[in-house]
Structure formats: structure tokens, C-alpha cells
Length: 139
Figure (spheres, rainbow, N blue to C red):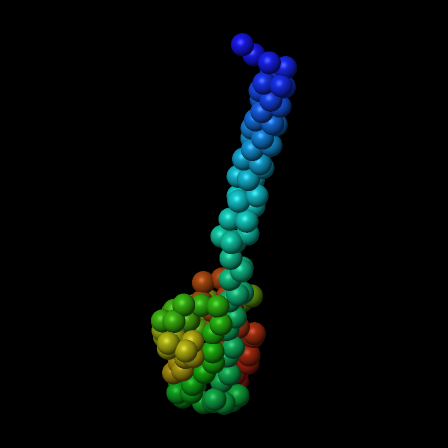
């Protein structure tokens, strides 16, 4: 036999159970989005530093085919990256057969001989990164 009190108790337990299931479902539905947003924030990494190259010639004026050095440092490039000397010829940058790999610290030292007399516009490049243009006059 079911009493009023027993029926009321059963009804209350049923309502509480349904309400807790509804709340749990809402919490579970919201939880993946929250975790995904947090996970997305964790997996985002800082943008890699923009590659940069500095270059400084040991002299500003040399005789034709006299050896001089170009030294500098790189940033944002892997150690051991190849850097190449370029010369501006007739308005275009031409890679010269003068290149060297950078050290573990990103520095380099390159021996250069030029034969084109006059003011030479030069730069050091590696991939898409390039140093500022510098001049060496060949007498």
C-alpha cells in the first residue's frame, strides 16, 4: 500500500534526480568547450623571432682582389645556417661564391675578394633574411 507521504517522497526524489541530470548534462556540454579553449591557449606558441643579419666589413676600401673580412651575427636563424655575400650588379642582387655557415652562437666571419673596381654595394643573405647594405670601394 502506498501512502501520501511515500508518494510525495518518490515524487521529490524523481524531481531532484531529473534536475541533477539536467545540470550534469549542461556542465558536461560546457566542459569540452572550456577545455578546448584552454588547450588551444596552451598549444599556441609565440611567433618565431624575425630573422635578422648584421654585417660589417673589416675595411671600406681595398685594392682589387685584396682579401678582407665581413663579420656579423644572425638572429632567428638556426645555428649552422648558410650565409652568402651578394653584390648589386646592374640593379640586381647577384650571389657571389663567398658563403659560410654560422656558428652555434649565430656569428660568422667571411673572407672576401672583389675585383669589380669602384663602389660596391654588398649585403649578406640567408633565405629571405638580408643584412643592411654596406659599401666597399675597390681601387
